[in-house]
Length: 295
Ligand SMILES: Nc1ncnc2c1ncn2[C@@H]1O[C@H](COP(=O)(O)OP(=O)(O)OP(=O)(O)O)[C@@H](O)[C@H]1O
Ligand SMILES: [Mg+2]
Image 1 (cartoon, rainbow, N blue to C red):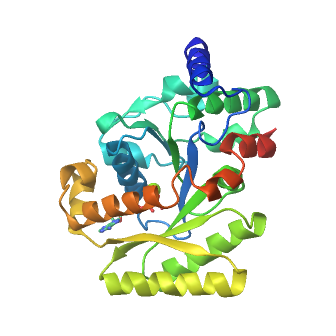
Image 2 (cartoon, rainbow, N blue to C red):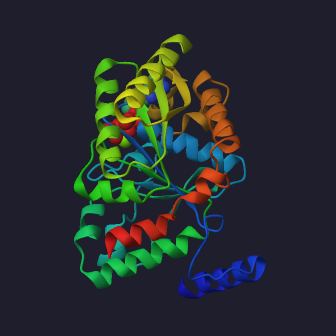
């Protein structure tokens, strides 16, 4: 793994003429945290299918299941987890060893009770983890973290290290209130971090637009923060059917409304706030932020 990674770094160095010890954003994966206030609003389904749609467009995506306790992504893929992040330390494996291959060549790391431990490890182990993540980050275009419901002190650190946050909410007032509280909590720690809003399970496009507009307006009014509306997914029975078949809906029902909506969101995303925009270049790299918070 180390040899492989250094060979890869060398290649990138030659290709781009860049010093590898200080990766730039163009060379480093863009880290995105998918989060919500309320649980069960569709984070894991969105993370998985959004990752697959980026992968389909030729990007290399690593999906990281950060749900402590429940391994959601494995279940949605119908795959059995062999390793979680905990094995990185317990069995002295590298991050590359614990990456599993999902459909369409999607790489993912299964959930489990790992994240909390990572933040409680001694310095040597934390440095080991950071070095592993740094090596991975030059091999992927996007690292997408499917966060568990709510925010723990451990997940907060990781969220704050990401380049941006995708906030998921449904149109229900309980989900909206919790989404706003989660956003406010993060905003109180970092006012610069960009947020994108995805409305899930909308019963009509009108409901989605109305919900997004309400959230955008309170965020602007009380936090003076811009919340961009990334798009909406309809409430679609194909999600449940696909979950029951343990196959991502994008692959099982590619022509369903929900699959088309995910594709639309990813094209809009890639054309708008993708990896190489000016706004992106202003922010620190994921590794830089993680290292600052971590060590
Ligand atoms: N667009 C949708 N249309 C219909 N049903 C949906 C949709 N999105 C999600 N669901 C339903 O909601 C369930 C929960 O979704 P998911 O597991 O993705 O939520 P989550 O936010 O990751 O939950 P948790 O907070 O527990 O991690 C799905 O199993 C599915 O039944
Ligand atoms: Mg989940």
